[in-house]
Length: 133
Image (tube, rainbow, N blue to C red; front, side):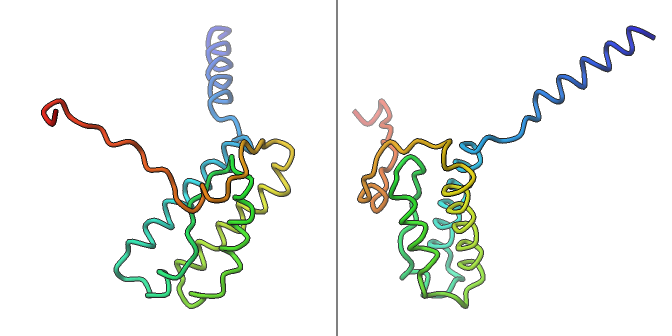
């Protein structure tokens, strides 16, 4: 009986350790990646309204202080209000902005304030194969 109780306690402790709540940083990071990917999908979708082409770019780097202005501008953009996907994306952007300025305000450190870096995202390096040389 004691062995069964001990085993049960160890299992529950292991489960609790692996299901720790997300930190502010991890939540902001995952939400910013989700928003950036959703925006990319929206831009490449053939079935969405043509107004999507006029939306401000939405590349997010939560380590850049300018991300706050970028989110504000995107949410306030007056176009595409009739497109459901854009409204959902604006709602996610609004949530991220709220998390950044209120819940995680003291937990995050901005490493740069280069607003141009959010306009032209750096693409990952292209790997060359040995046969190309």
